[in-house]
Image (tube, rainbow, N blue to C red; front, side, top):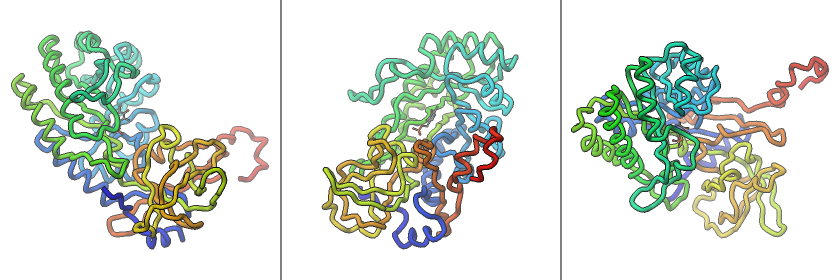
Length: 423
Ligand SMILES: *Cc1c(COP(=O)(O)O)cnc(C)c1O
């Protein structure tokens, strides 16, 4: 698959007159088309709902687009809950899937009426101590341990992950929760990340459905929903084949009909908490080449750095790069594409074959729409970029301004001595 940017050089040359690089830009049309397909893929399930994983791209303008398609929010922290509340999202439209949760965050989630997804059996009494009476509906996060396999390939390693209840704890937890008056239940599991196969959700769903049938049989619990969580990936590499969400939906439907319906559980709702799949392909980080350096290797220095996109530095993740206006040229130059941090891992690409990059060229770094801007930080005193939305009508809207030095210094406002500094 050839990765083609959703913006052209001409568009970017217009945009930078108002918004200088670097910035993240999002494609409203792509977000909409994808959200529509997801909804269609699960339309066979009456209670289906996607709770967008806010942590992936916590921007209210983007969350608002998803809201048109019936999406709620999956929150993991106090500020994500506050953001959802500010947007008028509350109650059952919020799934609170946190871990190692501070007491005040549980209290806030309970106040909003969010559905609370417990990460651990000890959180039952921890939550009860905070809220007094437990909510009528509680979800529990499941972690079977071991490795998660599809056919014979290992997808991920839940046995090594900090999340969730063991199988035994799920049964014990449900019994305790029922004794404490909880009436309705959900089951949640997130067992593999960024899967690029149509098999992940169906295999996960089968395991969860079978657990749900056993839980119901042995505890009598009223299981209302099964939350397949996140983990559906995207093809970061140009030769990867993308997931077919309609096939994934049908795959889940097949195991639903095989396992849940015969068990008399045909009214269980399917929930998802996708982040990456909803947004990643519909974001670009746009940056300009400002230096070239010919030493032991060929370097192109750009005006973005790992602060704007951490995945390559953090995971060695591949993000495709297009040199705007040179889409059709041969990739006959080998470069390391770097940012300006005093960290040698601040490289968006290593030994990447690209067309010849000239100073002033605009580079599009692909698939930054999820876990991109959101993972940003301020190392080296670098400031976070703006976020822009390319609307369906071609207009560009600023949906978050760039940070200024004043933002960076704002947390010194407690020191009056610095009143003389006017940042
Ligand atoms: C991160 C996360 C998600 C979203 O994961 P993606 O890989 O972006 O789909 C969903 N649920 C929980 C609990 C998460 O931590």
